[in-house]
Length: 116
Image (cartoon, rainbow, N blue to C red; front, side):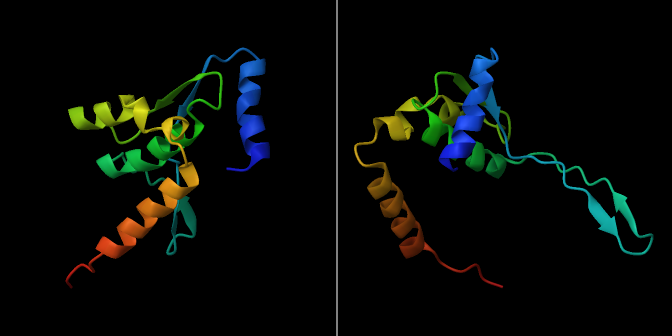
């Protein structure tokens, strides 16, 4: 997220919003090639849908003077706990960029292709 986007996001505070809701379930219609029409294609959330808002909440926590909430992918009690665990935010990390690189390298090194 660019600094300009972050400033725009924080403009809601100026007009009186006390919180922000982050989600990643965008309405994405499909195209029917036979009828050449746009067709609704509503996909409900899955537990994996929580990853994007959870990541951005961790990045933004402590940088905005507002409450942050996620609304996608919360299906189990462990999902709720992940959302509430503010200690996993970048605010509490001494070197966020180094932590991010380490997690990326760990994910790549443990990757095993799925069997066909």
